[in-house]
Length: 235
Image (cartoon, rainbow, N blue to C red; front, side, top):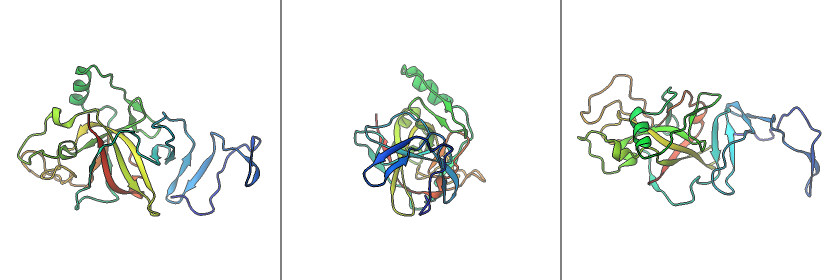
């Protein structure tokens, strides 16, 4: 969230642009920063273009929030489980690579797997989408609680949008791509209960209530936004 009355801070003011409303004003340079109300800095960064006319702000030097869906085609909507955390919805997995089985699966389909590590340790693909893990029922709504999770139903490499909103009810879309499974989401397969598929056995300390895991080494700032839904762009 940007505090009311905040101004961009930047080193140079020599480049000006003329506007109808305010006359000549300084252009924002690539070293401009804006202080976020929650602590962190919002910066201007060069990122891959996702969707025509879609713009993004970057929070905490890594989290890109787009103003509209990042895929032009319609997707399938998945609502968060009622018992899942609404703000602590995103956790970090702390990895520098996607799931081995996911990578093998994608490469067997002739898809080149790109794993970029950002300045905060975020893990992204070649389009700048965040590699994430989600539960089996996000990808397969019909997954049964007594069944093991399969590679085929996880549809690794599927693009998703994580839809969130701020305190002013503004919607944002976080671009992601599925690279792992959250198996400790039994029985609903939607959020982290600490119970593993297919047995339902509890793994102590693994019940954080999250819906998404960012596979990289950060999730900083995600808890400032409420999870609304996930849009799955099924292949």
